[in-house]
Length: 267
Length: 364
Ligand SMILES: Nc1ncnc2c1ncn2[C@@H]1O[C@H](COP(=O)(O)OP(=O)(O)OP(=O)(O)O)[C@@H](O)[C@H]1O
Ligand SMILES: [Mg+2]
Image (cartoon, rainbow over all chains, first blue to last red; front, side, top):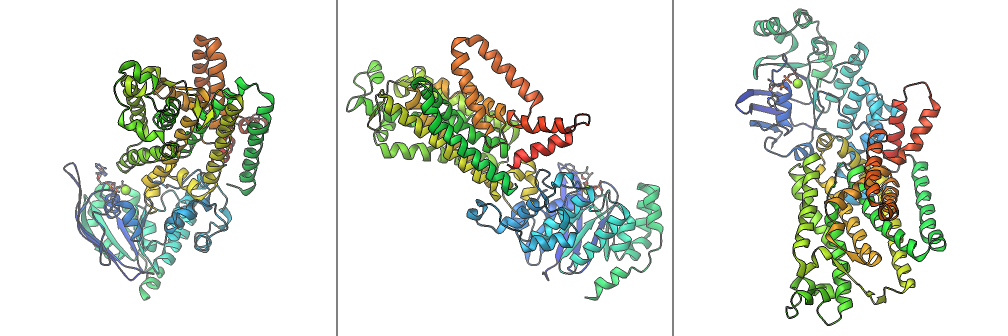
């Protein structure tokens, strides 16, 4: 679907003097599940906000040849950058189908917008199948389970035909099985797209990340494979110093070679 | 929206059309038919408010502005038609020798007047909406701004007695596009036009609500940022709904003039604008029929109770409003669904069911 990469160079975001992101560089390529981790307040969400035009940033964020910084939100989306939010945000009052139909609809002409929908777009059916929501077509999005809402958000990005998926804590609040399903979904999606995941869940990261960037206080602390990052003493220090015991424990577990990682890097 | 629900609404419009266009003229006296025509005018404006506020989430507190654009366009034309070659009577009172103000001149033309009724609100709402929505003005700020415009326009009209008739307004229209207005048959014709246009407006929003645009509008109302991140510009979505609602207010205002026979700043100012909102809230802002029926009910209360017992009517209206806001936030049209829900699960906390029922309402 895309050969272009997302390249972020020296990204800076300030909020009235406070430097939330202070010169962050990283890149993400199709075919990998790219992770952005870091303690609370490290600037992960702010990075995504800047890339998607929600916050004003300086430096550069390029998708292929195209510069994203400085463009309006909906124009960045039209270049193929899609995102989810830390709190699931679907249209609660609309059904799953209506949610997806809106996501699929930005290419529609004004006239076709004035007509009622007939049938289901093939792209929507495909996304429903991919995310396991086929049975929920007519369900009110507001009454979906938390995990299903997150999947619906991912499905919306799929029908929107995003080349870049920026996912802010997609497995927060999910059960273990749901996490596994989501991770596998992300691996499938990433085959043809750029997937960047912001996560706190270290176990999830270890199982599904191909490459990781660790942010701390608005700067890149470490970058590399899961094993490299976990072996980095600076990372261990930050996580020992700032995060809870669970995180520390998770970080210190020596990663097993992840099967998924190999699969991904082959192509 | 389910298919069957949508067609049910359409047959509802059919029934409503039969009631307004066939039953009412047979049953009502000329006087009450004329009153019903007046309620239809408010209902037309209310249908637009339902679209902008109920579905679009824009609390349009100044629809009096657009009502005025239609009403004064029409009133100027009818005044000139009545005056013939002479200067309109009220102007002569202040200065017998002064010429007709420049902006009155084009309203001699019937075509220009009809175009103005349609295009003026579209242009004004287009410019205003573009400026506000692109700047992401919303919520209370939007409401206050629109309300302030209605106040400003009413003050402007009040203070330009010679040009607009001031507080006394424009009245004493003898002709309506060549038809003699005090002929009951012609009065009935004007009623039919108003009733028919109300039906047309209902059909228009029926189609809008079942269209993809209707879904997008609800999505924009509930999560504007999310819509932006799907690649739409929410400002454009809101702009379309705002312009359509302004157009409807203008059409309501234009027909109000020949039916009621007078237009004054009081009919378009802050109080009038709020009364339009009140009717919509009362009937159910997000439903198809709620705004129209609510506006007609408030209109009826206004002309029956309001004339026989004016002090009491204000309190009744206030009380009604409080009750609706407190106990039926989605208006009277949500009552059947709520009752049904309460009957189905008498002991269980009914909230989820109600929510579902009201959602149905929103998607109808
Ligand atoms: N709009 C804003 N105005 C001012 N400060 C902000 C704003 N948004 C974020 N910040 C600050 O920027 C810093 C980085 O926030 P950010 O939300 O990017 O962190 P995060 O890494 O996503 O953290 P978390 O894991 O808690 O989601 C925080 O100190 C936060 O308080
Ligand atoms: Mg965050």
